[in-house]
Length: 126
Image 1 (cartoon, rainbow, N blue to C red):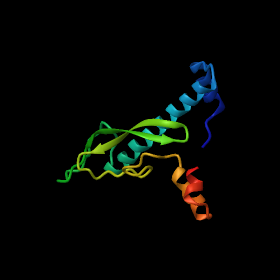
Image 2 (image 1 turned 45 degrees about the vertical axis):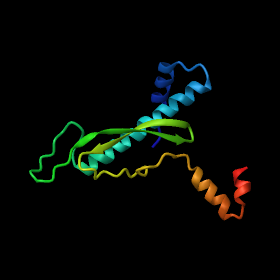
Image 3 (image 1 turned 120 degrees about the vertical axis):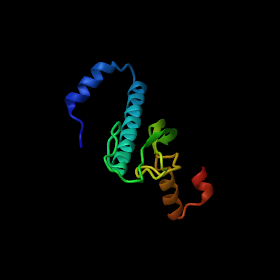
């Protein structure tokens, strides 16, 4: 899905960027916002209702939201802070990121690829 040019133009006008660092900070912030929204949608799907709603099921096993945990993640854009939502019963496991994952920039895959192609660990470290 591509963002419409009109939306980008309005955003650029509202932000009044002065250099590329401002643009990167803005993109980093957007990435964190999108990741937070994905995590909230995952929890919505698992619980069966949206935030600020109560489930209609009269079952004995009720599960509700129980705040969130802040986590710093390293990404290709730099370090971002996200809020991983929690549920009261502790059943929610994020799908987009692993439970204890702190690195989302794909560096591990690059290192494994270099190692599998015969590069020594010393060469990779350098």
